[in-house]
Image (cartoon, rainbow, N blue to C red; front, top):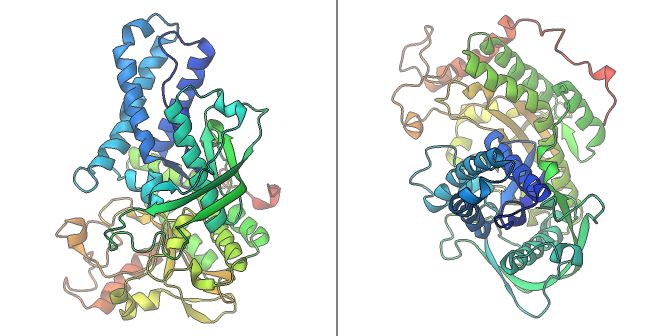
Length: 480
């Protein structure tokens, strides 16, 4: 899974009131791309915006409002109006939530996933010497704002630090620059040197993000000629060709040498897909559109997450202390690679039925428990599409040098907690507390577990055959 940090040069309006047609076209394209990414939320990659760059979103919106009369004379004024609408939406999704973290997140809380500083737990960096990043001439001359230049240098320093301390390579994470800065002929890597301290976020409150930067050497970081990858905005709008999940699964098994697939993985995916096919037939057209979009994205999301685990295992092989990156609390090291991941709470680990549903057959056909899991797609249990929630359960093996996948598919059993979603009676079919004619309302937990499993097993017996016209044969495709 690739990560991209979007620099403010892509969305800061610095063209004045008389931009050239080419400059304005590039700007409109950049805003449209960022808007579509934020609205569509691709799950086969990670993207971030630096918190200190948010001011350029609001400033650009204010500028376009103030100079709308002069800009009205331009040929593509209608496109500028569309850009204003998109900028306004981006500001609502990111800035309002960033300023009101827990109070006004009525829509999906994007700020905690998208803002670079929040995700990585980094507040800022503080240079400790005169060694600072130097922008290449072809970048320096194309950015007119000194503030933008200063911020971009810090972004290069932070990413060079992540390359050195976390990724152990320069391929996982790129900085996105605008097309007007980075043409197709320019170099795709720049060398960075910097000496600084990395100041973690919430340093005074260790309970909020206890593990995000734990064990990383945040003081006296010295980066000497470490390359950082740069990309243009087009990488965010790249469209995956339609493929089947079988294709992605087979490709992962052949190419990703650091992961091992357990016996029940493929059957878990089949059960998951059968359930979706069964339920889709009874949904409204708007829900069908959401289901179809997810099923289109699912194969590439599946591969991207397995690739992330493979990269994680590769990092484990390059360090001397296996637990340096692996955290039993919240998998913070995987988080630094862009994963949404978790471990089970101790109270759930002590639950017989939670443990039972996470006990799967390993690649050696032995029963093993898989507590850690990636969360590629999550919908709350009271959402009528909650059955789309996808989990990938895994465990480290070979002294943390490889990752074994034990389960890919539905959310595994957890005791229902209606208070968490503020509803008194569960309204989703898969809820363990959903009324079942075979049991009384207050049935014991062993029957809640049976009821939950039955909701998915029914899909196995009732699912219709897949549409042969739309299915894709993996035998007919070459591995990309």
